[in-house]
Length: 315
Ligand code: PAY
Ligand code: ZN
Image (cartoon, rainbow, N blue to C red):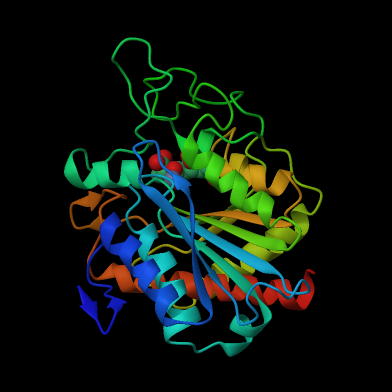
């Protein structure tokens, strides 16, 4: 699974492998520190990396945060975070982005759900909490409906729904952790990317259909990121589409990227990575082993385009 302390891109790694890797990187590289942000419902440590050439001390630098696997079954999102880490720490080809920006990477936002997709139910989406349950049915909360923005207005009020919003905003330890990270760095956090699959989309808020005040800037930035991905994507995959969540996809409340936008972080996006497809058709959540590294590579092109747009035009 490893070549010289690195994680390979030929498979989707389990929680414990990734967890140990983050710790190892922080031991090995001066620019990296690992933070245990808290525990998941089942008690797994949720760790994120801080990557900085100035130890997060330079208050003039913007912060970019990348998060993946808030939805358990969206396995292909994990290598996107791992690839970004690789390019920011181990195999640096874009020195300006390492020097001018501080990075926060949260690879496994929903570790309980993620492990459950390996051990039990491959297409599990939610976390594994049962605090809301009446009787013994319908475990789990959709973490991307559990944030405190329009919470509970447009989705899943039944515990059995795949988009169940939970018993209250931030009722879940995993979403409270994301809230705490974002709030801790909110003064400097300027771009937030929540990586999902699938659909080949770059989405911005709000999930209600209402546009943030800087909606036009978000659209331009979204287009830049999408074009950068399209320029290197597999021919067989569709171009990315860009737009407001409710207009391009469907109305959503309690979403992570909406919450982050609403508390004043200027640029917040949900990425939907391309679907898995073969001759038999589409099953978006499955992973083509050949696409793991490509997903990391092409999405990193999009992230870089977003970072450069931020530095050049939108600070
Ligand atoms: O905040 O942009 C948003 C929400 C959009 C995603 C959501 O429903 O949370 C879209 C879905 C996702 O990635 O979870 C799309 C996939 C295909 C799904 O599971 O429906
Ligand atoms: Zn998702």
